[in-house]
Picture 1 (cartoon, one colour):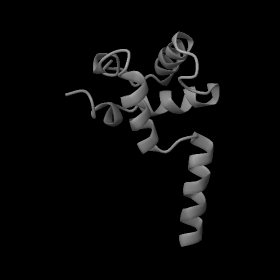
Picture 2: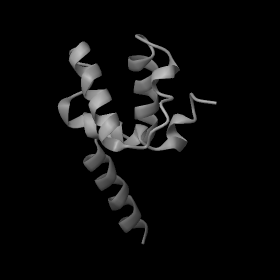
Picture 3: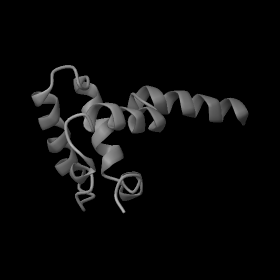
Length: 88
């Protein structure tokens, strides 16, 4: 059972590209150096909306994310409980 859980965790990090703590850290260091939390507090769980928003930010700043990380970041941001870190 433990092997299965470890394998699932490794698979999840591989599929999603980064762990949740990495995403939170990247938001603090990469998103907040250009704007405040108001951009993260948009009240939508629409993953396509977040994909467009994240992709647009990548266009503004080269190297912000690798192209394959855009969907991962958008999926994370589309979950209201994740955005609550910055939105009251």
